[in-house]
Length: 134
Image (cartoon, rainbow, N blue to C red; front, side, top):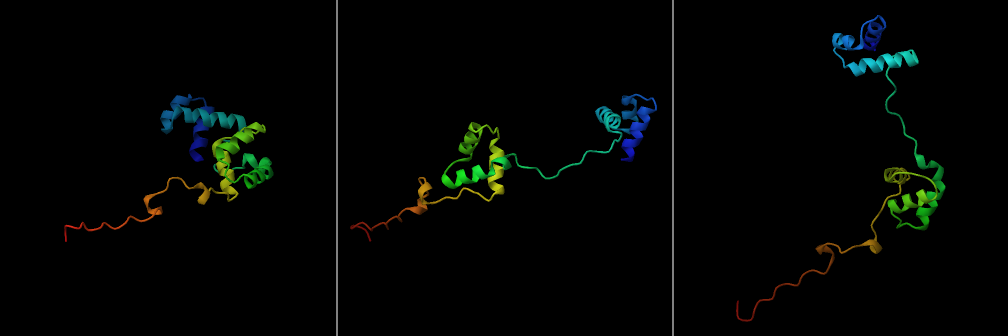
């Protein structure tokens, strides 16, 4: 914060932004942003970082939960397409994040099995010895 204040004071004192950038060994764009922020807000303090993101789909929560309960095999892309049809423009990731936050995950069950691995089928028969060999 001290550096920001000294940079802004130097520019306000009449030095050019590029000269101040060289003097304090910071980028010219950084000096420009700090001065702009000081002139706009009266402070050169940084903006707050992080924080909790609010889900875009909270307004559609009841509909989404009912839809997933009615069609549990519906894909995330399918849900997204239905939401767009309802007038809610969302990304694939937003739908995925919403479902994850609700604890709804895709779990495999017998109806969804594909070809499967070799370990699922019957075991191979033992090789029989040929009659001529011992």
